[in-house]
Length: 271
Length: 321
Image 1 (cartoon, rainbow over the protein chains, first blue to last red):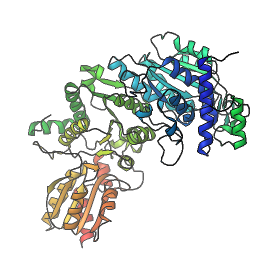
Image 2 (image 1 turned 180 degrees about the vertical axis):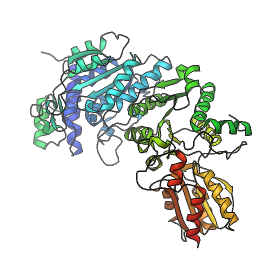
Image 3 (image 1 turned 135 degrees about the vertical axis):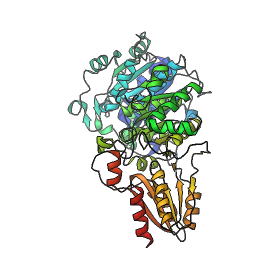
């Protein structure tokens, strides 16, 4: 079956993820970057309003990558959307780079905030959403969090307040790949029943297959209900690369040249 | 707000928290960017009048200090000026990483206010004392740390913080009825120490509640024939290094006095500065001990831990002779 434009973009994003990881010659957070590729691609290509030629445009929608270690997917999508050029992309994780292993606030690249300390981006997103309400601005706020990240109590502090303040201009996106740094979340802090948890915290909840771009588009389109929304994407860590899928060795790891070639082949070859 | 003899007396009678609340009330009426936030301590921040008159300018995020700083960061990014207040350990250490990321790393225009710092929470004990807040906050790159000496200076500090672009921590010590130092208008600039009296033997550099105590100590020392300079180091960071160096050159003994642990506060900042001099003078750092403390009334605690004018005099004399 022929791939849609969005599906093709996702493949390109995943190729870029592999390329940057391989080019930097260091360990990178591959698993969690691959699991969120569809969610982020749909958000940037189908949902958000922005202008890469004027990244600080006041009317832009705001995005915060709260699970900041998964920058590979973020930079790849920003490159696909015209915020980051190839030359800068090649500096990923190199000495003195602006594109570090965790996001560094830089509006020229469309990066709203510095992240890397888990559980913090959602609080900032609540503040951004509240500010938009105060200033009667119509842009929306999106924040992407992880299931492992949601072990952090601060996530739930922010969730309670977002619901209390009825921030219907805020959409949380959860990349729920059911794994985290030390392994299977089931054996650490369960990532099951996420929808029930967020519903009980006062959110409008939508659960989707986080690798089905059509379903993700539909989830974003659901009308808000005067409350903040969360889209819980059920995903596979390392998605798209057979030897990485659900294999936590690829949480933070480095590919050999041979494995890089194999991984690229699975995605259909070079970009 | 204007400093007059009458206002200064009134603010002192109300105490630092009520003065903070009054200053915020005045500021939100003058500047639409300013918002007061707290983690369920609006009343304890002296903000009741503001909360009643301008409910849309006050945000209670619930008892959640980490989120308080994160939400303030989002507001600050959009051009608003959040002032977030809570008891000193909770607004600094409880949310230390949020302070580091948002006020430090991202250098966002957030103001935080540490209520009841030092041992001014009295009988509430160590969980509520501000023993380490200066040490932590001054370790954050780009941070400004203000410790007003009386309620008039508190007004100045809050007003200056509102105008200043960048993260600021304002540390409140003292209690209702605290002494007045400034009862007329004066020039207050962040980072510029104020010399309250000049003398050639000993230079006392004090901050917060200890400025007045140091002035009293200097009077007692003068009576013993020892002349003192007393400096109000209201800004612990960035430190007024010119003033510190001038004092260090002109004095046999430099003394720092603070209602904070002797580790990492004003004494440490001054030590770092003068230790780089060619011929540094002797340095005596007076503060709270490097331990958790007993508990009791504010005045009991100050006496017990040697933060009275008489104790300062004894320590200074022991260094000189």
